[in-house]
Length: 304
Ligand code: A3P
Image (cartoon, rainbow, N blue to C red):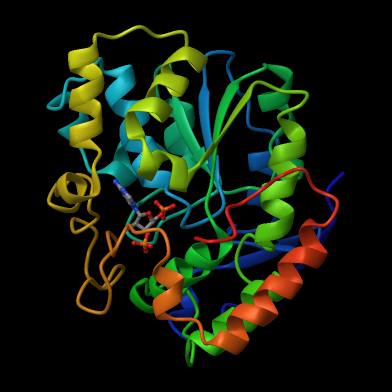
């Protein structure tokens, strides 16, 4: 059973917008202990599709791909609502929404697509029990870190930071929301050996979206024409999503996401960390990476 440590008061920026609960040492943006119990007791259905990621790993990109697949490439159906409203985040309550996403999930008709950033060991047990299919997307940690840092700058509900260096330290120590990137990617990597998990990499999708979309189709036992696959590739490309108001998060009120500070669809480029890390930061990160990933069979391309 998960150990709930404490309610951590929210830090500097908009204290009333976010509550942080530490569960098994992992800081989670969860409303309260009572709410955490509700999340743990979430009743999954066998046809639920779960999209799991560490933050800033391409969640909304994969969400758009899955939505296009579920809608057989019908772009208009994928534009019926903003992506934060189309599919719920299991554990989140957005400041601009009236109710927590969990309640929205409970009211949704099947088949549901549900997103989560929870580490594998904190996933509601019914998801395992019902043998739900899970798509996990992992991203190179250095790019994840940089993207997460910029997200903190633009999202009013996340703590304010002095600079990238401060965030870098916190990220390495796992002292950010959802905890350690290292534990997250390793936990889900191990879980895939015993559960129905398709483990994908952001960089692979970027390099060859068609190939990775075919993997998703196979995992979901879906067949669509090659025309539809091409449509999915196009509709979910960075440039098209960046200009799609139903996918670029510009519909979120500006006091929640301030796009004048940093865009949600920011760069979408593997290797952006090179524009942010100093040589010393990179060397230190590599040392830490080696230590944390030493016994794992999980490999991220070191050159990215
Ligand atoms: P950057 O900040 O590096 O640009 P998440 O959805 O998990 O919050 O991840 C957001 C990151 O995914 C952002 O990274 C965003 O730009 C990137 N992203 C979103 N859609 C993308 C797409 N179609 N192609 C490539 N990257 C995308």
